[in-house]
Image 1: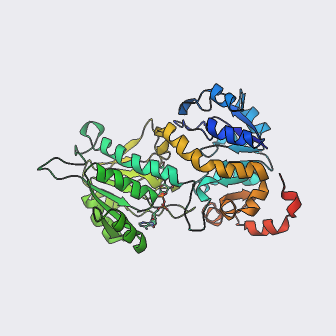
Image 2: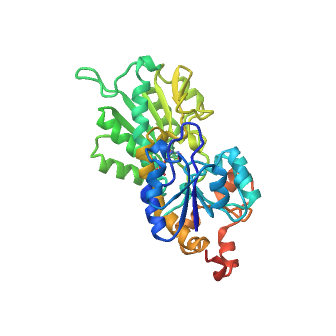
Image 3: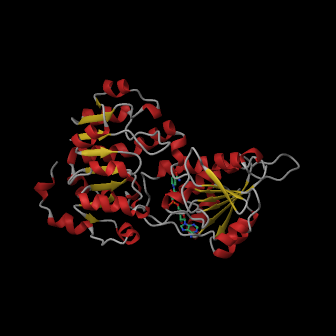
Length: 380
Ligand SMILES: NC(=O)c1ccc[n+]([C@@H]2O[C@H](COP(=O)([O-])OP(=O)(O)OC[C@H]3O[C@@H](n4cnc5c(N)ncnc54)[C@H](O)[C@@H]3O)[C@@H](O)[C@H]2O)c1
């Protein structure tokens, strides 16, 4: 198979979908790898690093997109990339289609088979290609939150850990999954008081065990969220309902009741945001805005700030699926339930139910398609 890696064009996005080590693995399996010139620069990889491992460097994105059978990316394609879509092309990347109706329609209209990193799911319900970026974003959320709590960055001038004789800051985390747990680790490490609001009692038991009682857990309800938000110095939105828009758990009146100069980091902004006053994503260049006296940080690609760490963490987990797809084409999907969960659009249909619901297009289960295609036609 021909695997293409274009340069990411989203503002402030410096990650790349494949490391030179990934090229080594794909090339060893007999695949051709086309990398757009400069694609790895933001993550510290030169064209020559790719060439040494067997990749070919092409001068433009158009060449990569038009020649490759499978395109590997990091972020969802932007409007200017829609022109490259064509029937039968495999697109393997983060897509977050529930919040992107135009992109979903473009994929459906052109018949691209789009496999979303974020919906690939293992039997235990975990999302293995979301995990490393959530680990990075969770850890970063506290790092940026601490920074924007500083007076000269617009915050209320509070040090997360306090000092002897001065109490630490209150960090309220809504959602105790991967982002929330990683945020809690860093916040605890910096000496803050940490509360996690969760809706899963089992998850709260787990958190209580792993943190050895050093954080507090609270059942997530409008009452508890309102109470916790009013106390927060730093409020982190970290909920997820897989493939669906994030629920607005913190309402505008709750934000109005927050302390002036407190900071909201809505990590769930990439799923539409979990805070009512987070009405648009921000960028690394212009990361915050102030509403009701509260600093709002709503960057949708937080891991982009640490692209080298993020690129390694991402490709560590994508490469085995990429290799399967390159080796077997769509047959890899037939053989792998986790990959089937990843298929969001195929042959002009939306094949992932929460996305279909969110964008208002009909849902067409992939199982039907899998049954209707003769096995021998699925070979790459
Ligand atoms: N902005 C970024 O750069 C970035 C990067 C990575 C992840 N994310 C986003 O961060 C969010 C969290 O991701 P994750 O990997 O931690 O997901 P996860 O599935 O590991 O955790 C989500 C948690 O939210 C909990 N939850 C669901 N509804 C809730 C509610 N009403 N109240 C309290 N808790 C609730 C779930 O029980 C679960 O434990 C997602 O929206 C994800 O897309 C954003």
